[in-house]
Length: 228
Ligand SMILES: C[S@@+](CC[C@H](N)C(=O)[O-])C[C@H]1O[C@@H](n2cnc3c(N)ncnc32)[C@H](O)[C@@H]1O
Image 1 (cartoon, rainbow, N blue to C red):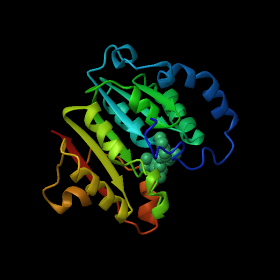
Image 2 (cartoon, rainbow, N blue to C red; image 1 turned 60 degrees about the vertical axis):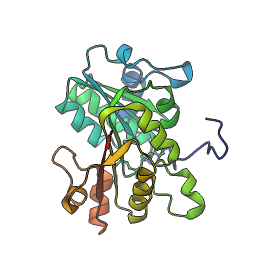
Image 3 (cartoon, rainbow, N blue to C red; image 1 turned 90 degrees about the vertical axis):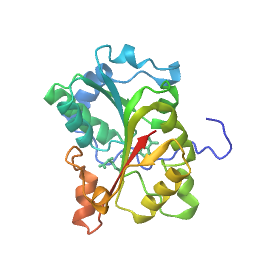
Image 4 (cartoon, rainbow, N blue to C red; image 1 turned 135 degrees about the vertical axis):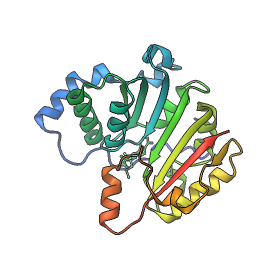
């Protein structure tokens, strides 16, 4: 990741409230058992992480982990990796893994980008980026997760027929994503009708962030791209 313009940190705060005693306990005892392999240690072999799984799905910036836990509970045959640098979110997902006995989830506590780069070509069937940090100021656009780099990596990681799902309640971020998708020949936007991007599909649960956006009067858009 040494290309010109590489931004060392593209995420915002890593913590808000202090962890509860229970959360701190789970972070010390459960998180080490469900941690994804460290990308700094070299390429990651998904079949070593999930020897029995039929597919691998990755969620970038899972926030509180509601979407990831929901998907993992409904797809026990699929291995999930979630990446998130926000400690309160990691603590929430760790608690959900523990409470629901989810043995098909691994957490990368940190920036998703090194993890993405350590995964092998064609290993993913689904890639989710739900409500990425919008970085609305023009001078901060370079911090946006969706970027030419991201679409390049998504094309490399997703197997043909795989899906990239992006949601945002920020119109400019949707335009930005569609613009980058158009420049990525490996992807095809699946929408044929406005309902396809205006209505959340039944297999796509609402996240906490999305619920807040709707409460505050912002309407989310749901984008599904197919890896050709
Ligand atoms: C607006 S929140 C949305 C969270 C969640 N997807 C949801 O819909 O509720 C964006 C999330 O992306 C995470 N994030 C930002 N940069 C990231 C990065 N480089 N790698 C992984 N996650 C990142 C943030 O910590 C934050 O939790």
